[in-house]
Image 1: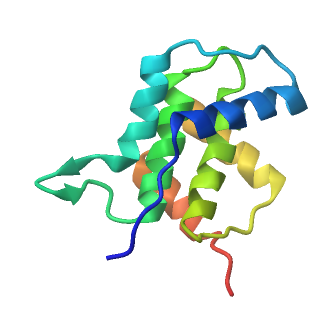
Image 2 (image 1 turned 90 degrees about the vertical axis):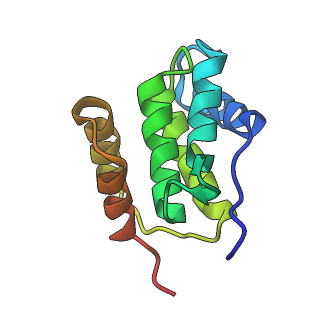
Length: 130
């Protein structure tokens, strides 16, 4: 079984700060526990096995949690998306994405509560073909 590389709180905070610097908004944490919960969710296990069966599902759980938990004062969707991209990058997953598709995914995740499986399916259709 291959090793999965997860994000740290520090990495997500750096991504958040960069998103605020680039796109504007108010910097800062709203709830450290909600941030911790979002970052830990992809690592969840039961009886010694990961609850999420693959890296796409793990990344999707991260994205969904960062969007829904609103751990930052501002920039949660931007932080969620770019943190998820970083998670995929660390695990050698590359995606082909268009800006309109990204906006659609983030709004649907926030307003329509897309499931982890639905988000993972969305990502799987956009995997970079070598």
